[in-house]
Length: 246
Image (cartoon, rainbow, N blue to C red):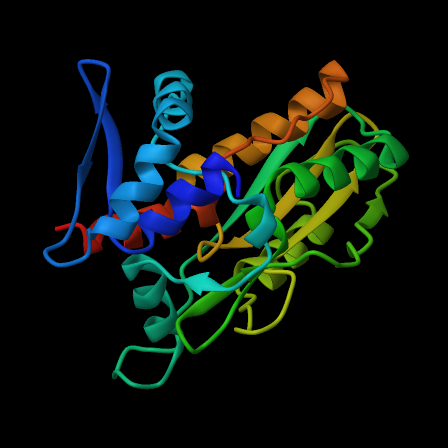
């Protein structure tokens, strides 16, 4: 078993391993740490110390279970409740709709960049369920981007833009279905408008900023998007395990 898997195994039991003055230490809920665990940790003590010394985060990257279901956060749960009919002012989605103005877009290049963005940002291919769980999909077919060419110069009150705004700003996304976003392009003679609608179950404002920056880096700068390493699932699993330690 790898060091990462060993640490993750004990994190799931609420045992937190860390270094203090170069020595291996642990915090554990009462009654969890036993002689057998102590003996196993002792056998790989040097490897654990080396790994923890080099690691910049206590969060373990769990690639093997990336596509396994995991819990929604409290904020996500609140959003799912808001989608339902449980409360008087329910059936309300927490989502964003925005328009981004760029120089005239090469649609083929843009589609390639958007595909790379989805691959690099795992929550863009996640499904949210109504049982308090979510899952990052391993297999998925990216929908084609709707593209409209307008033979005129850009004007904010263009009839087509108004129709897209009305449709996407009011669109709701169903739990249990993917994708939880829409992206469309309207191209004029002088500018292109990117229409982005996204359910905030899968991205907050900071994450949306990362998504847009990745898109611009890929499309305009030809930067190859790299895997970000630690995923949202890794963070949530760590947080849940950390609560056991308290």
